[in-house]
Image (cartoon, rainbow, N blue to C red; front, side):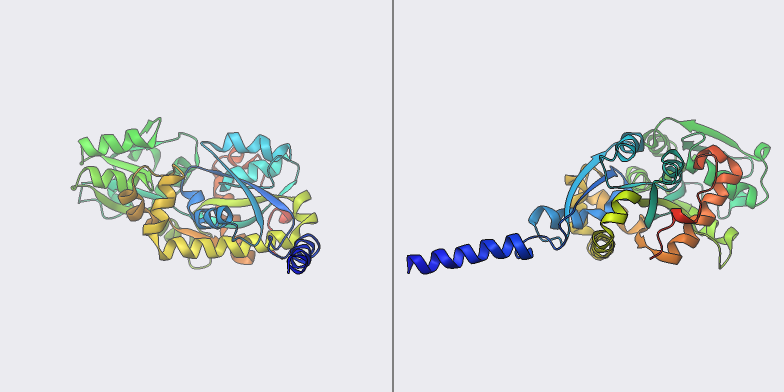
Length: 324
C-alpha cells in the first residue's frame, strides 16, 4: 500500500510540473501596479482570488499612493501592467515611445458637483458662483473647464478656488453646505455623510455626455495599460486577465458590501459604510476593444485641446489601443 501511495504521489507531482495540474492556467506571473483609489476597486475581487490561489493567472499586486510611483516601474520593466489615470496612460505611451498599450477602461467618471444650494439644477446656474476643487492643471480641472465652456460660461463668469486635497474640499462643504465643490468618489459620499444638507447637484458624467452626444466619448477616469514587450510574449495571459478583471468588476458591482470590506483592507476607503455607499457610484467597469477605443480616444482629444502636455504632448497613435 505504501508503495502504491508513493507512486500516486509521484504521478501527481509530475502532473503539476508538466501539465500545470493544480496550478494557475498561465505560467507567466503578471506584476500589476495600481493606485489606492477608485481605479483599483474593480481589481479587489481578483486580488482576493489570487491570494486564495483560485485565479487562472498568477499575479503579483502592489499599490501606490500616486501614479508617479508606478510610471518608473513600468518604464524599467519592473511592472507588466498598471491601472492609472487615463491621461497618465497617454503620457506613459509618450515616455516609452509607444512601449505600452491600453487594454481596458476600468473606471468611468467619478466626479460630481456637491452643494447644499438647491437652486443649482444646471451648469448655467454656476454663473457667478465660487467652485472649490483640487488639482489646478489636473484632469478634474480640465473636465470642469470643458463642461463650463461647453455650456456657454466664460472664465470671468465664475471663480475657481483650488485646494491641495479632496479632504479639504469635503471638510469645507461639511462646514458650509451653501458652498459648491467638485469632488470625486468616495469623497462625495464622505462629504454628504458629514452634513445631511449636502447632495449631488450635478453629475459630471451626464454633463459630459450631453456635450459629446450619442456617439461621442465617455468621461474616463482610469485605464489598464500593459507593456507591449510583455503583451507580445504573453498575449493569452493578458486575455485571461481581461476576463478575470471583468468578472471581478461584475462581482464588486453586484456585492458592494463584500467589496467594501476589501476596499477597507486595501486602505482605499477608510470605513466600510462609506465604501458600501460609494462603490455603486464609482462607475467601476471593464470596457475593452472598440468600445474602449471610442470612449478613450475622444476623452484624450478633449484634454489635448485644452493642454497638450496633459496627454504627453501629442495624442497616442493607433497602436496605443489594444483591440484584438
